[in-house]
Image (cartoon, rainbow, N blue to C red; front, side, top):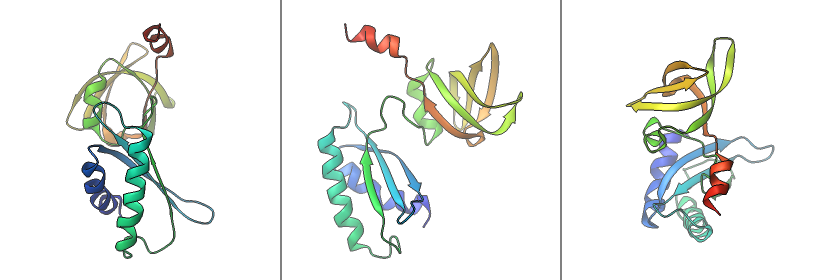
Amino acid sequence: MRIEEIENAIEPVVISHGCELWGIDLLRGKRRPTIRVYIDAIAGATIEDCEKIAQDLNYELALNDSFIDQDYVLEVSTPGIDRKFFKAAQLTSFIDEEFNLKLRETMNGRKSVIAKLLNVENNDIIFKCDDEQLNLNFLDLDLCRLKPNFDELMRGNK
């Protein structure tokens, strides 16, 4: 089963609850695979949103038994403050933020870098790392995760 087919089956259920589908991870488990669904909302998705969507997805996916040919674990979660990015378009609201990046290919002797996002245009993204500009395609990234600024988060809570 391809990820696009899973997204097409899951997204209408997520949207019907006033949320957006942030992304899906397919994880191979020892006994059963896990489908991890990340949801978000303008005001932030709640645990109640996750519970309702998980319940509806369990029902909806059970109706379509050709969806996955084996038993699986379904998890529904929010992306969290260290959110993983699944598409370049998701980055546009995070200009000037720092990211933990894992590159598919070694660049300057490194595959993992912390970089500041400068610009996003279609799948082309520009980061700044150690005073050097990195021009990448989103497909060059194995993982793109927001690096939370805990100092700023703590100041906001005072």
